[in-house]
Image (cartoon, rainbow, N blue to C red; front, side):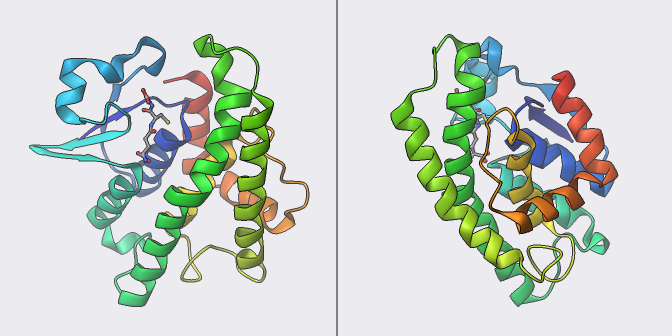
Length: 210
Ligand SMILES: N[C@@H](CCC(=O)N[C@@H](CS)C(=O)NCC(=O)O)C(=O)O
């Protein structure tokens, strides 16, 4: 299996951390966004969106980080990261969809404006965009914070791919200055995730850029 990723990105983090947690043997294919490698013809043949991450497993190609982590979890059904019961699966799907439609886009505005833009020569953060990001962030964070009250994990009373999906954005909390002060439940849950060996291994790759 090959994982085409740019390790500094939270979307790559999500995929790599799940692969590490499951002990999946993979080959890392660096898709260096700073060099525009996602735009090469070879990469576009794998993922026509010209975005990372992408998984290749033999002749099977899969993009969208949430689909990739579902696929990885199905490889190790005994892990419990994707429980078999229908309500558990629906609950996980709900939170993965929420992550890709609501949480990740909110975090991504702040990540881009405050942490990434300058590396791509985009200049200083745009205050209008930052304000938009903050409003979206608070709206989403309130939902997650209330949900986590009295729960250790997002779904199913156990660690699942939903924790990895949503938690991945917290790895950018510092550089993006995600305003987590008022969200004690999210912070508590994020600290628990940060203790996972797979999380720590992936954080090291994220910092090293590979
Ligand atoms: N919804 C997609 C988002 C993928 C995505 O936007 N990836 C970004 C990096 S985090 C990318 O490859 N950007 C390169 C570009 O837009 O040129 C997923 O979760 O896989």
